[in-house]
Length: 516
Image 1: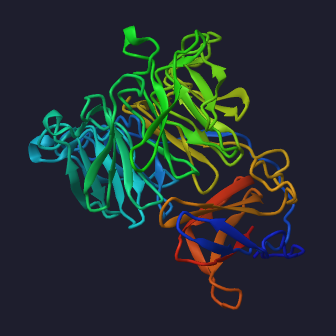
Image 2: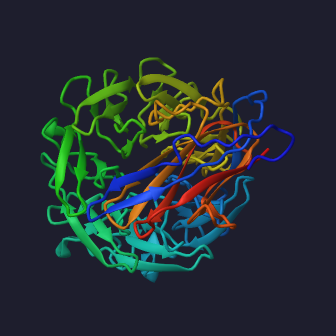
Image 3: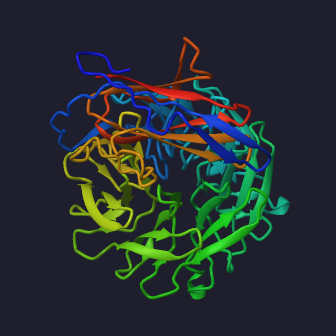
């Protein structure tokens, strides 16, 4: 509830109604209530700012060179990530960093000779048990990579050691894991499997792993470097860097695909189909607010330096932007994109920009690219970003670069962007057209298994502290804070926070507690 000297009002909107969702196994109801009291006048919008939070130093106490690694904000509010090198054995680290830039190294990998992983190229996922899960590209007794679990206190357990070609197991995972709505972890390997060109696998939290699809580098694709994204239909979406039927003389230009939890794969698009089509997607794809999917290609497009594309669930692809059109343009995006709360897609290019060291950009869901930062713009700035940023609970964007900083071993950066001109205008395309734009909206999406996702969208004002609370009924006197649904010192503008609930919960009431 808003506190202070402001007038108050209760916003009911459409939230005193039942929302019915048909799930695969049963029909259940979710009752929601969002109460927001009062309106605070908007202040002057802050200017955009770009800050370096940490410069990696390498050696025994710090990591070095975070590569295809998206930071993850944990339920404790800190960010977690990995570095490819650094640590006592120079085999990589797991680190924690807060929004002020204080870094703690949680684990230093020891190498495959010590039966440990080496070179964690991807980031982490925090699973429903509160622990973090990740992969190493090499290491393990066979030097083909590992899957590990690490507690918030830094206790690491190797859950799976990839075996190599003779067992048709995967090899060399570059990608992060995700936890599906069925509670299982899903990931990819860039090689291995029955056909030698990579796999999609699923694993429970105890480490029992099963390969559900093996790529052949033919029409289905090959060498998936990126991870997966679970769509609203319960299936998983991703890209393969090679394969497809176009450009076979170059090992193929790659594919975008959909795969079911049972391992049934459908190719949505084969890249390189036309002279202006993108080629070789290295980053994954995400589902945007509109239901379409978005991603990048490293090569191809009308200028041959990569693209940002949109693809419908039916596989109709549109290039939103072609890199390399000007001398100062970004070149060769290795990572995918993130959709921020302002509806823009945020991403990076590995090269190009005014300084040739890569760029940070944003682009609308239907095009219109804007350059946010050209790397290597000042001493200590990052160089060559290979991952897209993530948006923190505070509305700021956080990311890493593979090189740069005073030690040239990579940096962690923070980007603050000004809110929309009207911070009460909700720009979420899923906004109910009958819902006033300055009032909260809610979308409940049934998962394919035992969880459901409740997305709560609302307008915020710069400087607010926001906490979403829940209760089983309106008669309860005590409301519980949802740790993953909190924002401190909001930058203003539209926000969307997601609560994940089990299907055993028949109804849940929500409210916003907002303090200026």
